Length: 533
Image (tube, rainbow, N blue to C red; front, side):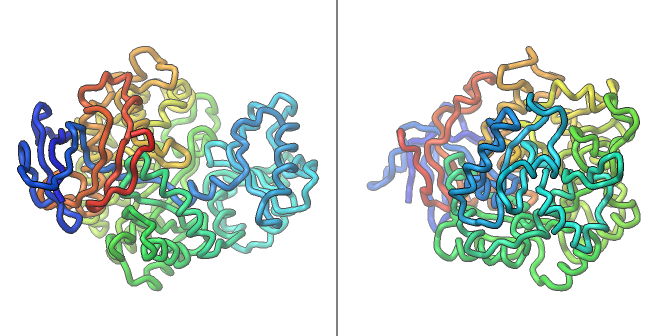
């Protein structure tokens, strides 16, 4: 196949933006990139349009994104009264009569109740079923009294950090849980079938394709209950020809024994698998989130000086886990949001047995850093996975979560690049927008939807358009150990690419969200065409 008369956008400026090219594709790979017309009969005319490498999202939750499409959406609910009505009306139409799942509520904004919701409040809902409602940032949940009683029967519940379990003044559980307890509930209290998992994946995949995402690194285990079930579901979707993307499946571990079991029971290692489904990283959750003051900081929170957050693992235990994973040939991805958590991850990665540079370990978020941490990150060679869209909703709260002297080190994208620390942009969907263009917009402008603050928050940390696109295509291919075959429009590389309505570097940065994906191609096949194209 030949596609000619196209402009090629390359962040590394491999091609002249004023010229058009012909692309030769065979067996899903670019076999030649030639300047000018191919001169071949039957070549597809690209009509001077722009192509770019497909997006690789290095941190998301694809299964969760699909599941949310069928769950009760409470995003627009503004009062407790309305929430109760929504739940009761929704119950009559749901398929699973034993459970009610809700997403996106923000009870801090409710005006008809003077406290955050508890299990006792949920007793007012006239539905005698297990109820589970996820906060809009998905780091907090509230569950019904009936589900709370079921949870208390789980032996492993009592091994989880108390800081993530809310209790009242008498020491009783309120039914509100944070961070890793949210994951624990997801994982332990229900198991989804392979068929349900496949349905959710097939619900989510079209959203990837319409946004030009051709590969994902996804953390889904918590939402299905079994890595084996998850793997089989992805494999079966692939076998049916409906996957269309490459998926790297992370294995979230809840403790050291969980890691030991994975290493013993699973023969495949990072990067191994089928043509489209491969083992990703061992995922370790090291701290929480700043909104809940559970991200581990080296200094007290300015708006909560009584706390510095929480590390989930003692250093020696984390060190052992990193050593075990590394010695088993597994890449590790550590959720470390606060600077104390990043420091703890670094200590573990600096062990000789960690083989950090060889295995390309990664740190997810790293939203607050320091000069000393930047130096150590460069030396150890860890990758940082950033989520720029979070900044759009959090920039005006940063001074509440980090001391003033550390604000320049918050979401310090440009500084990390200047220290030669490799970074990726990612969505963390469904928490962040699944559209990579939104992440690029946020990284380049550092403003919210209303273009505030003027000039961008900490504008010295703005990325260029080229840097942002590279961090969403070429750099994440390194995390897959596929930098010689993915992430670029180049001879010998996999033909994963998108047609865009504009040439990215010619767009006014503040207008970047006018960029749209017109077509998505994976392995030389068109898998999405915009309807109005």
